[in-house]
Image 1 (cartoon, rainbow, N blue to C red):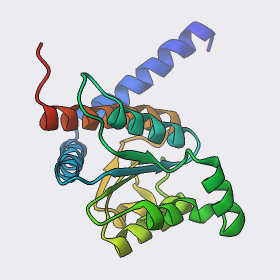
Image 2 (image 1 turned 90 degrees about the vertical axis):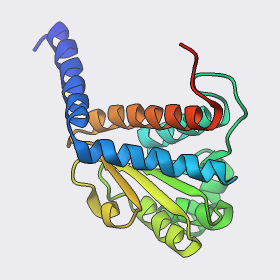
Image 3 (image 1 turned 60 degrees about the vertical axis):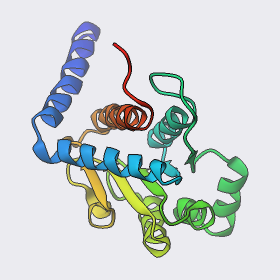
Length: 197
């Protein structure tokens, strides 16, 4: 396969996964449920906590940025914390407790009942996301996890599991940011009014 074919192939694969989402009632329902849950939390004065590893950490930061700054239009900022951003906290927890407890300790410290934890894990088996979900249960924090087609271990641990119908990490991650953008759009519109077209 030459470079031009690779470009076309990658785009077609990305489109195919998004078309699968579009025709999956269960995935669409989980996106709706997640957007409704986050909207309700913000209406009640709560916040979102986001976590992921690697590219998913970058996506967690991206989503937090959309909430705190803006998505489509100017409006008040919404409280959101990406748990992958503070190097002092990350290295302290990693050194003292281990990498698998990075997000658990932060949920314990930063989370309150009524908040929403949003985890991103393409496999659904990231140990630090699993431990964070356990901490969410203890603190009565609702949880949403974006993952791949199997859902992995997290699928039975969270309140809402959004399973992208793919086993390919790049395709899953591309879809995660699309889904997150949809949630941001709905939350912004529900809280602050619809954009004028």
